[in-house]
Length: 444
Image 1: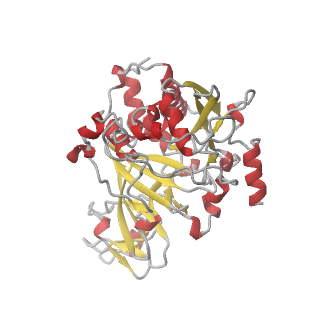
Image 2: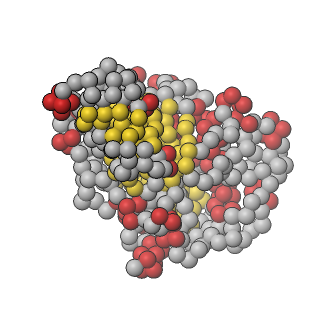
Image 3: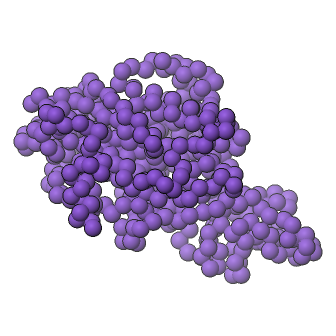
């Protein structure tokens, strides 16, 4: 069932005063990467939820996030002097602000007038290589939702982001959609991979997992609501007659965890810059060694010809796009039309660019009144319904879901496995999963 025009507008508009924007501002939100402010006395333009801001580290390394425009006459504080005595000074008339937005010096006016001036500012929290902010009403600010990144040692912190030029919902729809992995990301060489005897109950190799997605083009979808959003499974019957379960999560409002063997805590977040663009954040939330205590897929991810599961560029920090609409996402029609091992379903050379192509070519904001959703869109429908309901509930005075500190945020996980005959996929990746218990015991 398609959304109405009003529902689509409510879902996609995130600026100040919008219903969805009000909801998003009640959650701690990535503002930028820590690596974008690498040392004291650095500053950065930030556009977030339709607001123009400036982030900076003062001379002692403390973080500030202020409205970009000086409250005097509106000049940009991005061009201000980040001075040695803890503050950023507007170069137009010399007004200086600390990390809280308080004006602490005003050479052209009296000290009492300076004390009465405060720039719009938002609190920050640095965790997991990301500088987070809370943009909602101060009186409703909740503790930072720690998914485990606060305890990560410096050596295990990995965070990156890359821009996508479309509304944030389109990108999140793609993250949540498990079915497109049977089409968009497929390549012909996978059918020539030798059988490695992992099409049986237990944990398949990565290449068997890809083959199962290739052969299982009509998965059954099941969605299980939870306090943080939902988990859902794409269930495919394997060539040997077993059930392959890929369990992914949606964590309101921005985050997804993609099905991974045997389970995963790493998050992909889609954060609106404004209504027409978004940042895709990828960050480690917990010790990455924790996620695979038996190294169950070791040696199974060797590259094959034409493998679009190559994800580049690699590394941390702000990633640059190699393929965009300007170069037609690098599409090669010969590769797309090649039915041999060198062919790929899309003809686009890497996994991420395939996703960008489909979501960006929908247009800046897709008109969902024109959608025709089917049975394999069950998770997409639930995602839209949950967000719309939360926004409406907030407008009606009800608190948003999953904002409190009394939740086990570290216990949310995606997972993947070929099920035993009587095994319930809902258990996979939870604290009751024997593989998770084994990993928790090793970590302890």
